[in-house]
Image 1: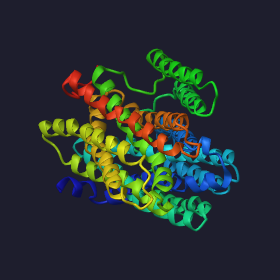
Image 2: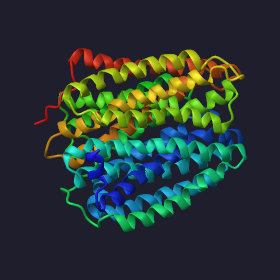
Image 3: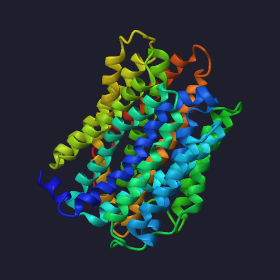
Image 4: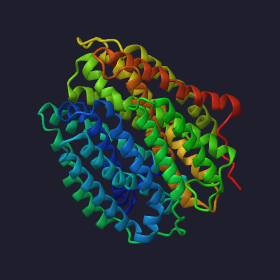
Length: 457
């Protein structure tokens, strides 16, 4: 408890509220969007591009997160948060006004730019404002805002979707953003002690975005195989350019850091594939209302929050290692359960309770590991690249999320999502495929023995 008290001591309470508030705006927006998206496509069309809303939102967030350290260094904490909030609010207005899927996707891109900054800025702030021993607590606090989003996002989206007012769900984010701007102006310092921000790695960002767009395009293109191959080539090119470039997205990559990034990516992909389509599957296959379907899907993030809070309390190295080994086992069992339960049509609600438990356990497993993986990234990264290490956490997480969203759309459409009987096949294909991600996490442990914390030279 002493660590939590120290985190909130004095002016720390207001600053912590701003750090988590920005993440909450981003997370609430995500759950609002996933909850109302079935209603959106029912009105304006675009089912074949269902997953694009998340993929483009996340690609924009990646670009913005890569700019976060530079924005923080140039504008200072206070004005960086204000600028990010304004962009986010404009995107919410565009989405609320959309009359076609093209307009909706444009709004999601703008929201992604603002949201990416709001999610990335806290990591730079945590490193600058808190002692290293408080990092796991601060990381858990930031992660915990996804739990707040599980309550607020589906509630807003679900109620308004049932009332036929999904536009108001996006519109409700605008006054919330305005209140956040006022809080940031009052609570944050103008400047923080930080080294100079690294230059922007434009070439790598372009390759990153192009790889996600190629994979997203494959979900609706006739020559999908060629676009999948192109996406793979672009990802390889990204790391080739990154290795040789003077301006980089990631710190110098030693083996421990690569393993940590791999685990981070696999866990993020698992969550993304589940949370995008779960509301649709629950509404179509199990006869749930938008509100109930959104709330059930959000149980995963609620489990993530509980797992993060419980996992962050581990301090003994042996306990941490056991937690990191147990976490992917929990996720693997839960995703296999989803692959068995979700595709079965049960409009009488007979499978709702076990599905809810499986979704929650996916989140618990991810949450147990998450604070420790993030903390170890900061510990392992080269000591002379602190800001780059902080920004890379969000870059890796969002890149994995974008690839997961694009791949989920590809798999779902390939399984016949748009056909009358294809939703059940799409659910089975998605959960079966993405159960491989936690299995890969276990494989990393089996070949390395541990996610060790040697700092790169």
